[in-house]
Image (cartoon, rainbow, N blue to C red):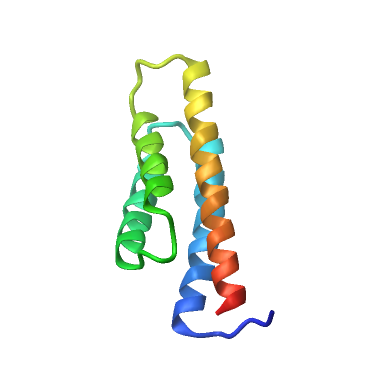
Amino acid sequence: MAFTATNYTVSLVLLMALTVFIAGVRLRKPVENNWPFLYWVLVGVLALTNSDLFDLRIIAVGVIAGLLLRFEFMSRGVSKVIMTVEMAVWVYILYACWVTVISY
C-alpha cells in the first residue's frame, strides 16, 4: 500500500484534486457555471480512454446530472436532488482513483 509516482498515478491524483475543487465550485457558485461542464468533458474522455478505471454507466449518470443542472426551469428542490446525485458520482470518482493509485 505504497504510493508509486508514475505519470498515470500523478494524473489520477491531479484528477482527485480537480474533483474536490469542482465540488467546491458547484457548492459556492451559481449552477450555471461552466467549470463543472468542462470537468465532465475531461472525465468523460478519461473514462472512454481507460475503460477499466471507471464504470461508464456511473460516469454517464454524473454527466447527465451535470447537464440537467444547466436548465433553469427546475425548482430548487429538484436541483438539490440532482446535485446530490452528482456529488455521489464525484465520491465514486474519488474512491476509484484512490483505489487505483494505492494499488498501482
